[in-house]
Length: 274
Image 1 (cartoon, helix red, strand yellow):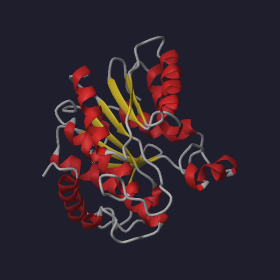
Image 2 (cartoon, one colour):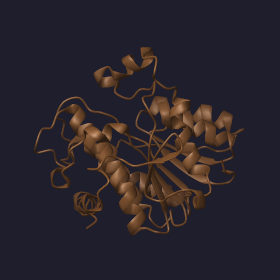
Image 3 (cartoon, helix red, strand yellow):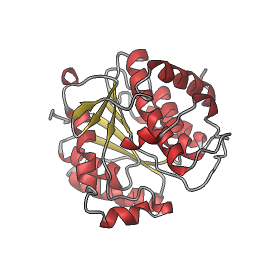
């Protein structure tokens, strides 16, 4: 694994679970961390822990609720003011939302919080990320998805896990298309495994994760994220999907450049960038 000393790394969903575990590991490896989270109390506790791991280095922490795209715009302004360059953007925020919930922006909540907010954040930080990396936390659950780029507003009710799988498809497709459209930024998506974390707290999945013998620790789940951030780019495949540090092909429906291109265009329109 390469050196992270002096690199600026922004991690969303950094208040707990995989995001916090990755932040702690990268801080010990010398990275300059920037934490983003939704819950103020958990975010401040995470920042305190990461500062200790970073031997007292300054660790900015920004609250941002990805269910509101206005929050993403505010976050971008804050990051631009403080950081001329971002070496790694870890799009780790997300989860599964109970029921068929529509955000104030008019989009299906799981698709917005997992994909559209990250797509908007990455697009608006395009200049700061030149020569850097975008890493999306995806999932093997993408195989359950049935993504329709024309229906990001969720007009068709697809069920909780089908919708979550579609959002994880979007994470993988976004990374693949970003590699084609933004060749000066290394992009990748990865599967962290089934992790003991706050993921799925609203539907009880986190309770199952606590007792499931095959569930991974957050540290194990975050390992590939840290590896993708630190490994020399020449040893990685931009646009690739990784699991346990290995390049892996997603399912056939997700490994589709035409679908990735359609998703990109629909996402641009959805977040007002077309």
